[in-house]
Image 1 (spheres, rainbow, N blue to C red):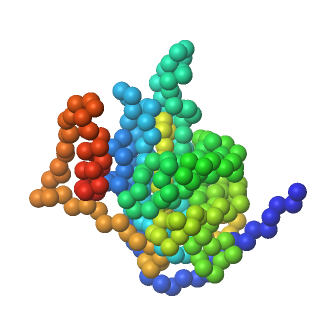
Image 2: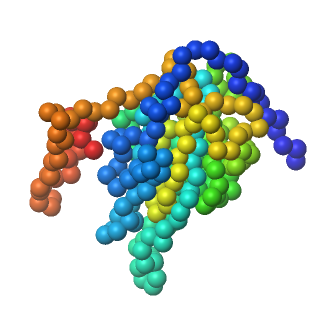
Image 3: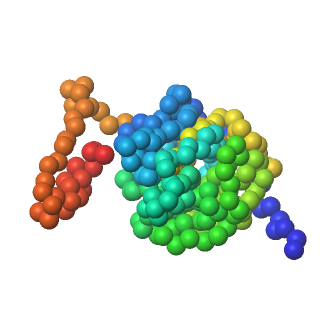
Length: 267
């Protein structure tokens, strides 16, 4: 069948004040504790020893999109073995061993894309588009060394408004997917969830793999179109670490959930 016509057009000239590119990056605080941003926050690694190789890591960008059309890029540059999966151990290990998800989430929502939460949506390296644990096959699987671009379109004048699309090495690999109604009208933060992979991230201002049409990257966004998440300030210049201690079957996890709800500054 004939491919659908590309409805995305070249970005128009925008003379509005822009964000400073160095303020748009992955957050060092809005992340799970096993996420390890390195190389000036342009490379994402994670803890992979002592059982951490079985856990997902998640991290959110410091800038959320309120309007306009912008793109972000990511590339898997390394895939770790993630521990022994031979014999009986294979049945106990989360599959797939290497996993990458890229999507959008709202501030304060779960950093684990693809969970049951209503405030996130994502594509994963297995080829699925996921929202509230509902998986829809949209693209072929992708892996190492491919530049994956996520295009977020909130431009009211565009026929693709309120959609998110995926491109691989500059070529569209899926049609625009609708952003769920529950997430519309909210600031949407690019978010990455991953396991046993090392990921290069690029917010711009220049793309690694240009699209068939000109499109600004999030690091080149107009100030009016984005919201920068404020970095939490440590009390007295020092950060606080809390170690909850509890016995089984005594409401320990209920207490932790209640504490985090009342104290969202804790990770």
